[in-house]
Length: 323
Ligand code: TXA
Ligand code: MG
Image (tube, protein in one colour):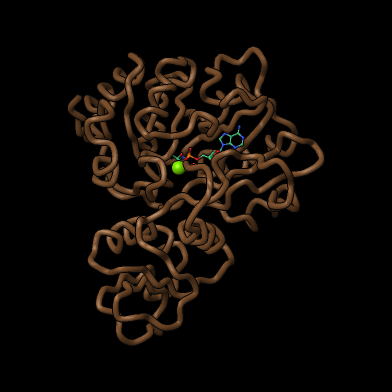
């Protein structure tokens, strides 16, 4: 199949919506990363996502909706979920909630779990498309499983050209790391399944402590175990020196001497800028002729928690699961 490259005119979005409504695969921009969309209420369509990405079937997908009000048909909202949705939707927050038994969501989307991940993206092109489709759309990041998430249409095409019907190109994603995933399916605690584009501290101001699931068994989020977002070259974290055969992923102004290939996430030390640049620069360093990538220390607060999480996962050399 030839993958259509679409823009963001009314006609382009009408075509993208038509392809989705017919059961096709369309990659589209969100404020976090590009997603690979298919109808979430159509098992045949949703299963094609797993095939196109080579994603394990046990790893559930996020259901994307054009407006917050639509989510209550699929998921059970308690007071915490309502408060977070009111504060942060549309935006880079995914809520894992109990799935309504009668909900029209294909079992392939939830990987058979009793919970469902829901999100209302803030990107105007994503919202316009989702409102046109007017059905729930399952969308993981639009990368091949195990590759860094795509933040441009070119990244999507590099991974998925010929495997999907279309990609809607709206330029680079403004946040650059995936949504924060919070599990509220149990009344007693809120779990941070994945740090992301909405900082943990911001969420905690609304619902109190959001705890780390590490140590809780079994893993709550099948896709969050082990290595992903991975460049194929070895990554060395918190590097204060750089070897002659290493590329440098820098942060700030105080760079170690000697790197031949350098990408600076943010010379001014701005974590939002660093998040925006992260996946593109990982892809660029990976495509260069360096043997390995040295990553300078990055602070852990705010968006730094998500950046450090993605780098830590990319640095693991083995593991199960991908997103
Ligand atoms: O920003 C984002 O979240 C992007 C854009 C496209 O919206 N999407 C994204 O999807 O990152 P994906 O599939 O790459 O990551 C979703 C994560 C996976 O790790 C998956 O395991 C987890 O959410 N997840 C989905 N449904 C879940 C559920 N019912 N319970 C626990 N974890 C779930
Ligand atoms: Mg992913």
